[in-house]
Image (cartoon, rainbow, N blue to C red):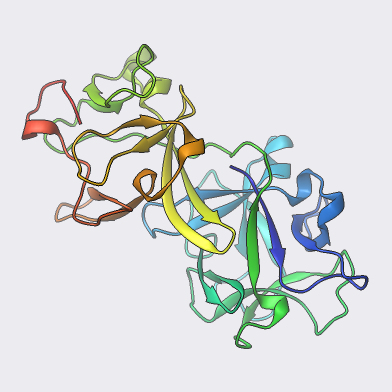
Length: 283
């Protein structure tokens, strides 16, 4: 889902505000009741950090997908900017959330003291700058945020999953059995590339002020990767039935470049090849 991200502070007339990336490159707040595409964001999941990039829907529409970034790694009180995602994400372009009073603090991966902040002490008219502020005021209205579903499509940030025991196979959904169990299959696209049923859009989900973590959405089916409380089958499910069993946490593994994918509902449950074999089969 795409998000409208609102600070705890309001406009001069009490209007709800929304984080916006303007066409001139400025990062500001605008009136949320008059939200345009500049106010829509996707939370693209970064496996390396476990955090997320804030992808601007406006930049995607303009053909230059970009994410919110610090102008310098130290944060300070400098304005924010957008940078192209083509070189990947970094500590300067990823963010995490933490409890911040009645909403969430949005903090830079580069430093836990650098917070997303509406500049100044108020009033905060639309057009007020949003900055990376090195400091924390114990949950002041201009430094806490809520995330609301904007009804706007996510920007796809696609991953494939290949087990170390069979690196030539990819975790695949079924085009003929939507909601069926995932299986391992050879790459199904042209020139040995992944097909859409083997591509998983990595997003980060926040429900209001509750972080849910990584969610993987199949590109062919627009359905989420899901398991159940007792473990067992991993399958695709309708995203409208989302709960902790549709969320995941990615952690390090002993081998460099490999990762363990844990269920968000039970950290002891991990994405696993059934039987541990190296042939096409179930996950």
